[in-house]
Image 1 (spheres, one colour):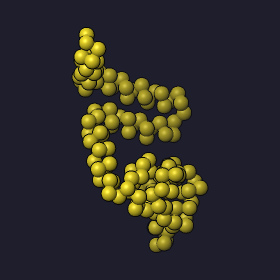
Image 2: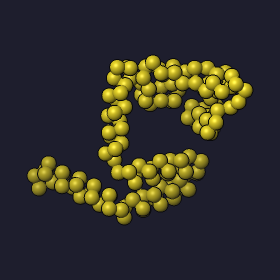
Image 3: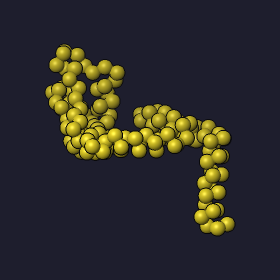
Amino acid sequence: MASEQTFYALPEIEFGVLPGSDGISRLTRCVGPHWARWIALAGKRVPAAQALSIGLVHEVHPAERFTEKVDAFCARLADLPPEALALAKLSIELCRDLDRTNGRIVERMSNAALFVGAEHAERLAAYRERLARKTGD
């Protein structure tokens, strides 16, 4: 998520170093080697609209609505089960470099832990209750 006024850059090359904290490899996985070269090697600034088109961000909003949009997104995340969010994030990171078979194993292990948890049972019961009220059962 970005404001229309946002720019993205990795200016470290100007100082004779590379971005730290896995910056280049994460950028390459996110936007591919072509754009990673453009941003990291040339030190080019990428405006928000272009960042959207290359997959660096998912949404671009007018500056005056940006805080509202970020707050709504964060509220949505806060309403989701934290254990499921954590395992989804972990599974995505683990599966990134795995073949399909091993990726499915990671997903099954994550889901097995979630299916036996109290959060899943509570949310499933609440959903069934809402559905029953809606259908008049």
